[in-house]
Length: 126
Image 1: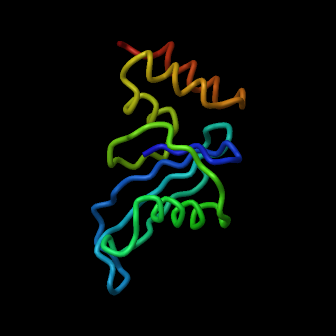
Image 2 (image 1 turned 120 degrees about the horizontal axis):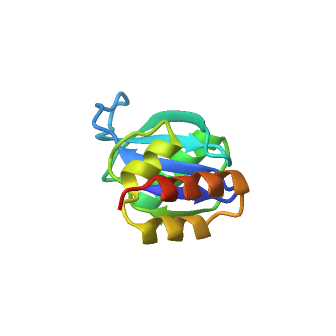
């Protein structure tokens, strides 16, 4: 899942296949955090009990873990359960149609990340 945070950072969340380390947890949510220019910032994983938390609760917990604060977000795309530490690779692998990239472009006002999306559009082989 791809999220745009209120500060225009991008958070990619994925279901990790690593085993949970925390007792009482049965699932692991991974994340990759990208800066407003699309550069990689941080990544990690959060253990959780799938019977005790909603998807929204997981996303909020991952956002707080990744950024150190609670903040609003918008889900901007569903992505596969792959980890990407490179925003260009994420764009290349997850957005296969011109309409998907065009919709993604509309989500951002920051020119740096908009340029990355435009470049992915130009390099794509649809």
